[in-house]
Image (tube, helix red, strand yellow):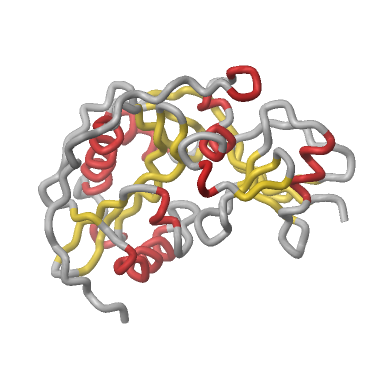
Length: 253
């Protein structure tokens, strides 16, 4: 059983936010949302980037995502292969690259990318700022709800907010990919015993308030077949930007 942290102060966005980020200009000026992991790792999250040539990844304890430039060359794929797990696999977020000869797809899930430029964000009076002390509880909640990848250091990617009841963490949401002008809202999850109370929507709006305070736009990913989540996000002011894929690929042995 994890210990209940003692900090319970509501979280509100801080003062002194920065203005809008400049458009991403690397690799021919591609739009950051077309290649979000690469835009993050060559932009605001460059300090996390582990490099193999032009192939990039986050430290695996932070998040498993890897990234390639918009038009990867054979040497870029070779660089990516250097990051492969012992079984040769690598996760690729939101890419439709045609795999080179010898590579194969092992997992392929259809997803959607939604942008929240119409979200009426607002802090939530019950939301508390989660810290490293809360990670054991956050990992437990993620294990029970499966919102997507969340590892021991994911909290380092940005602000994470939670709602507690009787000291127990029952819902959370936070920031993941941070790219020029945009921040991803991620790890949106609610304890099964507390669903249907609007907690997820409240936390998404609270995290979006943090993003908007920086002069940025929130965006998010979810499964193409997750109709209930899509309806929720649309009701909050998110709209579909494009469909995408969540793939795991295997490098040539």
